[in-house]
Amino acid sequence: MPDSPLPYAGIRVVEFTHMVMGPTCGMVLADLGAEVIKVEPPQGDNTRRLLGSGAGFFPLFNRNKKSIALDLQTAEGREAALKLIATADIVSENFKPGTMEKLGLDYATLAKRDPRIIFVSHKGFLPGPYEHRTALDEVVQMMGGLAYMTGRPGDPLRAGTSVNDIMGGMFGAIGAMAALAQREQTGRGQQVQSALFENNVFLVAQHMMQFAVTGKPAAPMPARISAWAVYDVFTVRGGDQIFLAAVSDTQWKTFCHALAYADLLADERLRTNNDRVRAREWLIPVLRERLASHSAAELSDVFERHGLPFAPITRPQELFDDPHLNATGGLAPMDLPDGRQTKVPLLPFTVDGHRPGVRLQPPRLNEHGPALLRELGYGEEEIARFAPNANEGIR
Image (cartoon, rainbow, N blue to C red; front, side, top):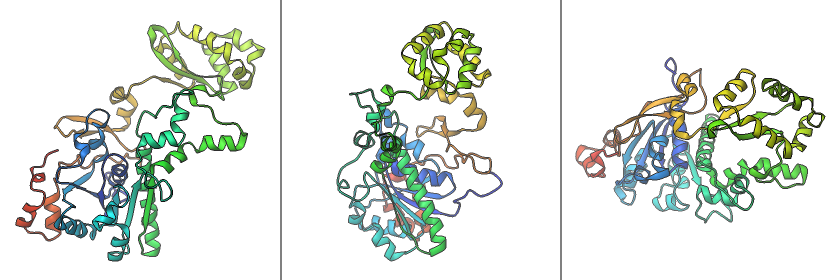
């Protein structure tokens, strides 16, 4: 948005977060223009050092942020944190329950000092019988019905990304936005709470309501009775796979015309969508046999020309070269912690026709600490005593 300020420009957020949920909240606010200051321990956020599936956490969820290293286990570190919070509109945290109280950085304490402060807590569970439990995305997927719905019967399977952590952070950001709007009316801040379990329940609410309406439990997605007859992954020539769908009677006619399946179009057993759903047991094997002679590229071309739903089966790393993402600015340049350059997906919406982009690279540990401490009135000798190892600026 080159010609106008971002929506939350001028809002300062101080976050005490790690892993995915809390950092996602800060990333959303930062992408939308807020100044987000990440308070890290002297050794840095642990996600800076994760391997495997966690290797991308830090650069993805901590772009557009500033970093300051403070040892909150010391009186000096807590005092600096309080001075920093005094300049903020929003505090965000995702520590275990009770941690912020022990540090004297909880909402009740901060609200006495500044009634306008907005305090966002990201937890495993909202206050209640489960709040003492340790939660992970996988834990709440298992206990919240999502793993049951994703896996085959008898084989619960977590979703292939951190859905609850990411969405929980997004709901934390939405709550912060609502609190900011209400503060404009009341002059007072408030506490916002977001939780993994409750987020997961919201994700499976459609299946809960399916039971409420029909009286029949929802079957796991791989075993469900599809609402549409042609709505499946097909293996085609060369062993490639492609998802193809025809979800209305009009699309079925188009599908049959496009692929010259006149016999299927004339078959009275397949006249309506519900007829075709009842015929899936024999219809789908027929379609699998016929479609196997086509290539995925050929079918993609046919379906695109006729406006039918289709999708190649894409692996995440292949999205870096996706023509649509690259043509529409959905991927932005980013520097990785080791100095290499890559591209990163942006928030999935536009504001005034633009995707909010990357203004600040994922910060080096304590990259902005000295400047922030000077702003708070600390002298150079005092600054040098804060997290001296962090001042090396390691990523």
